[in-house]
Each structure stands twice: as structure tokens, then as C-alpha cells.
Amino acid sequence: MTEPGTLTQQIKWNKQGLVPAIAQDWQTGEVLMLAWMNSDALELTISEGRAIYWSRSRQALWRKGEESGHVQQLKELRIDCDADTVLMKVDQVGGIACHTGRRSCFYRVVEDGDLRVTDEILTRPDEIYGKESSTNKESSTRKEPSTGKEPATGKQP
Amino acid sequence: MTEPGTLTQQIKWNKQGLVPAIAQDWQTGEVLMLAWMNSDALELTISEGRAIYWSRSRQALWRKGEESGHVQQLKELRIDCDADTVLMKVDQVGGIACHTGRRSCFYRVVEDGDLRVTDEILTRPDEIYGKESSTNKESSTRKEPSTGKEPATGKQP
Image (cartoon, rainbow over all chains, first blue to last red; front, side, top):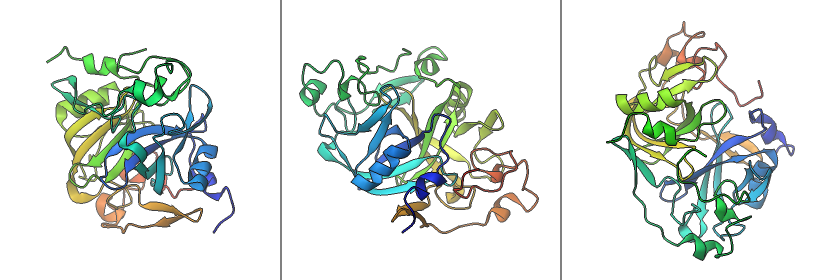
């Protein structure tokens, strides 16, 4: 054991005090999503044993699954060689990481210069979040829970 | 087929014109590293069929493996739901992605608040890059090839 905060002191946070955090299915190895953590999020992820991110738009902690129920239970947490990226192996509750109702956020593959959707929607977002969830919900966009934006389409905002 | 540039127009680049790009072993699913791409790097990655990143310190394109030989041959490229992260499945030539000579950059696991190294060095960096490579080389740090820094230790700079 080391002093509390020792780990977070070793991380190379960016100018916004954040690092990217990758969530990977602990059994299949599938990459589920990438979001961001600040030092509080990282410490809470470890202490609570579940993925907790920092919502850049809300400027608030985001306990993944807080509305959807799709919690990511932490199995392992790794840091890369230059200590500016986090990799988590998680047990994805409900089998859905993406706010679109798909297993992974990486459901589009580049083919011939265009994007092709490869993964099916397992549960419709309105079933996950409720029909009244168009604003101020985790569903509005995976990484930016409370902006009230429509789900991202891959277009420039 | 779509017009050239259509894909890059759909990406939500950050203020520096970059997105994080994850490289994952196409066969084992192991996450090998995370680096950054600008639009040129993404287009070249697709057209050349190998991972090409943007070195933030050099402010230059970085063809992964250009000095080490550890090229990442592109098998598949995906974009996430809000189009601000790239996921590549790659064939890692030489079986080494990390500048430390390890298979993956995520060779340290958090245990009891501290970092424990789990993966062995497969080839020593001086054997990969040569003993005269302490400056201006890919070896100096994985993501920032030409800064002349020592390999990252996980400490704050």
C-alpha cells in the first residue's frame, strides 16, 4: 500500500486535468468505449470498483450507468508507459456500453472511405432511458450526459 | 465510394485538430497503445494500410515503426458513436508496440494503489533502436519520438 493520491500524482494529466480512459470487456477483449477521467474520477473508479468518468460538457463526475443501469464493474485498471492513458477491463452490466443501445460505441467500420454500421441495437435508447429523457440524461450523448443534444451522428456539430 | 475527405469531415477533431486512436491486436484483442491522429494521419493510415499518428511534441507525422520496424499493419478501422475516437485493429509487426520493448504499452496494473509491472521486456530498447538512439529517435518516447527524453517512467515530468 502507498499513500492515498500517490497513483494520481504519477499520472500525466493534460492541461484540463484529464486523461483518456478506455473500457474493454474483461472477457471478450472488445473495446467498448473511450471517455475521460480527472483525478477524482480515477480515485473513485478504484475505490468504488466501477467506471466513473468526468463529463467534459457537464463538468461533473459521471458514474457510468447512473441512469441506464449499464454500470461498468471494474476488473482491472492499467496505465500506459507514459502514464497518460488508462485502460480498464470491465464487466459491462446489461451488455450495452453505448448510449445508442449497442454493445460497443465502436459500431461503425470504415469501408471505401465511408462508415458502415456493423452492430445491431440491442435495446432502443427510449427503452433504456425512458421517453422523457431527451434532455438532462445520460442518453443525450454517452460522454456528455446532460447537454440535451441529440445522439451523435458522426457529423460535425 | 465517397468523395475524398468525407470521412475526416465527419470526425469531431479537438481544438488541436486531433483525436485519440487506440491500437488493438486484431487477433488477441489486446489493447497495445493509444496515440493521436490529425486528419492527415487518419487519411494516410487508411490509404497506406498502416498506423500513422501525429506526434504532438514533434508536430509531425509519425509512421509507427519508422525506426523500430514495429509497423502496425491496419486490419480494420472503426469510429465511435460521437466520432471523436478511432479504434484500429492491427497486425503488430515484431509483436512489440511499446518503446520499452514490451508487447503492449499497458504493462502496468494498479494494485493496492500502486503500479505493478506485469509484462516482460521482449527486446531491450537499445537492441530495437540502437545505442546511439537516445535523441531524435522513436525510442526516446513512444508517442513523442524526437524529444530526446528518457523513456517515460510514470513520474510527472
